[in-house]
Length: 237
Image 1 (cartoon, one colour):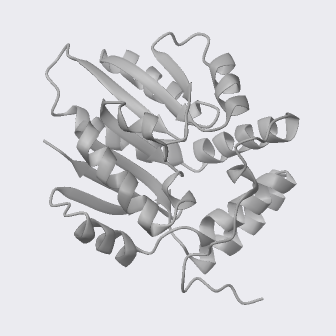
Image 2: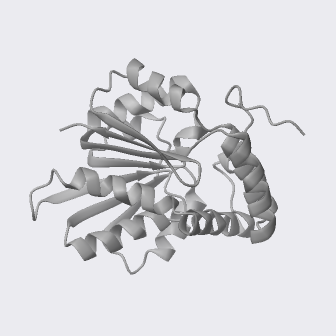
C-alpha cells in the first residue's frame, strides 16, 4: 500500500481527546515514553537543553517548561541531567489532559523540582506563564500551521533563553519501519494508531525552514536525528 507523505495529514489522534482517561491511556503514555527512550528521542531534547544552558551563569535558577509533557518522562530525564550537572532548575510540565497530569505527578514523586499543570496551551491562561527554556517533544505535530505559528511566536516571546523542538520527520520509510517496530515491541492499538498518524502529521525539512522564515527566526539550528526526528533549536540570547 502506497504511503502518501506529500502533505501533512489532518487526521486526529486518539490522544487528542483531552477528556480521555483510564488504563488504556496510562499504558499508551508509558509506551510512548519507552519508545522515546530506546530510540534515542529523549537524548535529542536533552542535547538541546545542554546547548541553551551553555549561556547560563553557574548557579543561576532556570525555569524549563515541557509543553505536552505526557507522563513526565522527559522532565524526569531533565531533572536527572540537572542534578548531574549541578544546574539549579525549576521544571514545569504542562498538558491539557487531567488524567495525564495526575499520572505524571505520581511518577515524579521523587522529583520535587517538577510541578505539573493541567492547561490547554491554546487558551489565554498559558500566555502568562514565563520560562527560560520551552521544550516541545512530539507535541508540535498535533497542531495546524496557523496554530504552530501562534504557539511558536508565544514561546519566542516568553522563553528567555530559547526553544527546543524535537519532532517527527514525515517519511514513508519512517511509517513502514514504525509498523515493523510496533509489531516487534507489542505496542497496544492506541500507540500503534497514534504513532502512524503522528508520522503523517510530522514535518519535512523545508516546512520547518519555511516556518522559521515566517516567524523571523534568525538564530536557530535544524538537524536531522535518528530515529527520523528533527531537532530545531531557537536561541533567544
